[in-house]
Length: 225
Image (cartoon, rainbow, N blue to C red):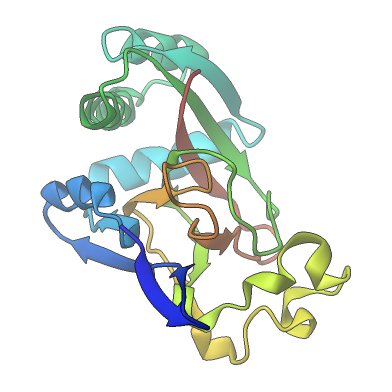
């Protein structure tokens, strides 16, 4: 629902102020359906076994890049096959299967686009919005996604509006303290510009800068049209 302001005796629509919500309960992800929520975060604490397995996987397969279309029923086998002879893949495959099942159940999808990638540099280093309905993002280890609250960002500086300047010069934010960051293990739903009635309301976010030699394992899930 949009707010209505009266100006010169005419009704003018003003955008709803978007906000984020987070919880240690996975039920928080259902709040993404609320009109004023553009980020829902399940603060999931990963087991030591899973974290250790992910670090081992990154060391063994530093160039891992898996892009596929999966169903909740078939995702475990697809991921297991893609990880090949990596011996400690069971816990990771189980966790990814859980996330795919949750994503499909929440949005009534039969299949999703999945990307599991080891990164040693920012994939999307500038703040931007996604032209999708909604995207799930989680970082298993390493620096996680950064984002700006709706009220602190100047959306006119997105894309060409930034005049090619880096984020710290474009004016998209005024203070470095305005930059928020997810934590490894967090399962985040990022509402995009293609969500119904969410034009100019998609979450502004970017990939984090990584130190030399640092790697992160990133999982994203997307709608399949």
